[in-house]
Length: 601
Image (cartoon, rainbow, N blue to C red):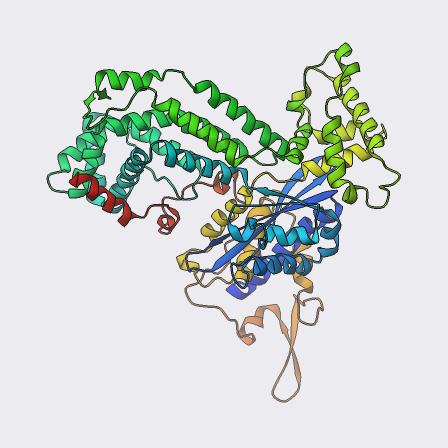
């Protein structure tokens, strides 16, 4: 239990559950304390199912205090149903149970979720219900989900048939070597014979992040020669191998994957940036705009890799077959144009969103002293932010704190930042600026900037919570209830590591966590006998009198893993989990059904 010695007593599942509850209670109390002391906060919410089919909702809170952004796990539980009204009631009940409803009422400025209709519905979605209570909150559709949808829109419009074939090929390779130990052993022997590094095909889909697709394409390119040699050898006795070998030799599919590699690589870099911890909404949108410029520059640029394959009709030394119309060398150009149109559609311009960009120092223009005197940068954006968030930022002094006052403070702040270090402003952080300029009487503009910093750009943290949930609630622990799972999640995600963990608050809570709220007696216990006399038992004989609810076969201590590392919490594919296939867009049966269709062509 957090590597703490607990002696020979309380070594059963019931005692472990009590310890777990006390540790999670003190851990969650720290999160509640952050919310109480922060300037502003926002909520992120997402839903998923565990392997038993139960619907669960994960709730994260983003707080901003003196310019410092923190994302904290708040709760995991199940609502009555997946409809928007029940999820809304679940969120409100969570705030009430944690006794932070009154605090959140005055500090909530944003809400972020994916694009599901029960979350983002304009009339009856959770976001719409929240706006009825908090009219000024800014609702954000998760930028990473939007990026994924933009990519799907692109492939549907540009080359849908080629994309379906390429997807069938990548998923078919993954399923073939995962489900068939014989084929996997044969592939490994082929690697050894050809003297190549062993890399097994990986899965695309899953949690749907674009990095999965990029990893699968990279491995496919590195192992193409080995895969083709092995599948052509096995094709005479395995129909699935025959179908995959046929697609492997299709020149149009190979050209498409080569062209898409360049596109997906840039999308992957953008997706990974958006999944970083503690990035602001302003930084996220700035990165999206820079990605649009990168893609625009790819138009009319020749892809030398595609041209080489089209000219030689070979790839990795293997001959390709081009059936029907041969792909042109400008395949990339058409895909990029469709992608830019999809990005414009999925990331529509908004005056309020554009105004938040001034909170990123990367957007501030380079100005010398003469230009700084005449600069009006940010004044229009400050006016937009003041008009939208003014009633919540200055609820009691709106009449005394005017837009002119805030604009003047912005001008002073802008001048001081440029004078501080004009060449290093891109590396500045608001928490340092607010601390260094705390004596400059700029509280009003700082409040406005902190509102922008508290707005979450993605709901990725909720996805990481579900990744942690799958590591905790496995098939061997399928009866784990939501209450206990929530406690374990709080410990796994938010509790400090063993080296940094302070057990004193948890011990103090456990000592008082009795039905009578009286302190536990550790040294002795008084038990009434059948003759109404009392007997004082030492701790050595306690187990002989107490009937422990221990279960045979369960570990003597509740093994709670240390806090998840960043690698564990990434939205990555868990190839060892039997439930991974449930998240893919194409099931194994569908993949091989399409494979049979291509084989008959």
